[in-house]
Structure formats: structure tokens, C-alpha cells
Image (cartoon, rainbow, N blue to C red; front, top):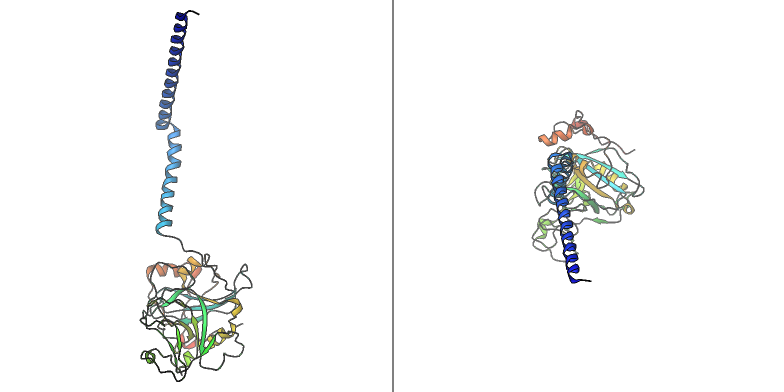
Length: 342
């Protein structure tokens, strides 16, 4: 074949290739212009931006909410017995306590008692250290006059008798003596623990100020609430017990107090095989954590005695005035008597 014919064919082939490429580029440019035109002037623009922009903003909001304000985590537990103590507000020094029980972890809680009137710390509640995850807000400190809020195990029972009342099944009992002390001094290594010195052993210098009181009827039976126990953080609160009150009009320094008859009923009700626990919260926090912690729903609340109404903040009033937590007129203290067990 003549070389001139070959060169002519090559030139024509390359020319056609360049023309085809130009056609493709022109088609791409035309398609891009059409896309931009539709995007800026047609319904496609509103479809894309109306869908993706809200999704982006929602995702950004959720990331900020979860990262900076994490939700309360579930509270794992093996309890089949539960003592629920509710206060009308975090600043209230009184509340109600009720006993619940369930047959298995998958069955609902069943009330085992009516609501009993209870007294808590003179300054209300503050978050304690227990089975629940750490929470934001006011934290329990030594000597702050607050009762710990949260979920706690029931521990040792301390008393002044040789044995527990008849019918009690709790195996962890210790009889108090003059050589027993519950340490509330954060500077001591035995902080928030029972120290029982044998007879004949000399008493340390700090012992007299930490000695447990004897001969007080209200503290004849004391049920340990395992706040900041057994691994104790110095200064985070100590010696938190459930015991009887001396006067229902007076708050405590941090313990939870009920009628002496109720203490005896609780002692006979506790079952070590059911791992009893105490949940102590204000009604607003209880509504928040009841589902995550697997708590029973409060069917009703008894009123507070006359003359014990706390000064509620606006937020507390909104909680109390909700439909599920309506407050009824209070009775008089002198006519108060604990309702018997069914």
C-alpha cells in the first residue's frame, strides 16, 4: 500500500478521534449546564437542599447532645426486693417509702406495703455513690446535711440485741458495743467503715469521737445503706443508715428515718436471696430514671403532714403540678400513724 495513503488514513483517524472527544466534552458541558440550571431554578434544588440540610443539622445536634450531655445509663441489678424512697423535691427533707418485690427479673414489680412517711437529710438529696452511674448535679459530701440520691445495696444491720427480731432472715448482723465505732473522719484510713476493737486492746486517740452511740431508742436497729461503701472516697459521705426517727417533725443529718414499727417490718421483710436495694430519688428524677433503671411506676403518693411543706422552686412546682403527681391536702402531724402491712 502506498505510504501516502497510509499517512492520509492516519490523519483522518486522529481527526475523527479528536472530533469525537470534542463532542463528548460538549455533551458533558451541556449536561452540567442543564444540571446547574435545574439545581438552581428547578424543583430538584429544593428536593436536595430541603432534604439534606435538615438531616445534617439534626445529625449535628444529636452529636452535640450525646457528646456533651450523655443520657443516663442503665443501672444493672439483680434485685428482687426494692425499697423506694421518694421526695417531692431535691430540697425537701421528707418523703415516702414503699416496699416492692418481684418473682423474677422479667416480671413487673409488685407493691408489698403502702406508702410510709419518711424523713431524709435537712438539706434534701444529693447524688451519692452506689450502683448507679455518676450523675451531673449536686454531689453528696461529708457533713452537708443531705441524704444520698441514687440506687444502693442494703448492707449490715447493726443493733443492740443479741439477735434480730423474730422472723428476720438477714444474715449480716452485728451487735453494737462500747468498743464499736463507725468512722466519719475523712483523714482516717478506716473512713466509712465499722471498727470493732477487741477487749483488752487500748483505744486509739481518735476512737472516742467516732464511737457509735448506745441506748438511743431511735438507733436500736440500723440498716446500712451502702453509699460510698465498701470502696470509700474520703469526704464523699459516711454512716448512712435507715433507722427509726425520734420525732417525725425533725429531719436527719443524712440518714433515712421512718416510724419504729416500719423498721421492724422492714427487718422481717428483707430476704438475702432477693438482693434488696434502696432507690432514693426526688419525683422528677424518678420519672427520668424509672425506665432505664427498671423501677416500678408509682401509682399514688401520700400527702405530706401539715407544716412540713418545703419551699419549692418553679421547676419543682411544675413537676408537682403535673397530672401524674397531683398533691392532695395534707393531714396533721399529731394524727399521723403508719399504715399497717396488708
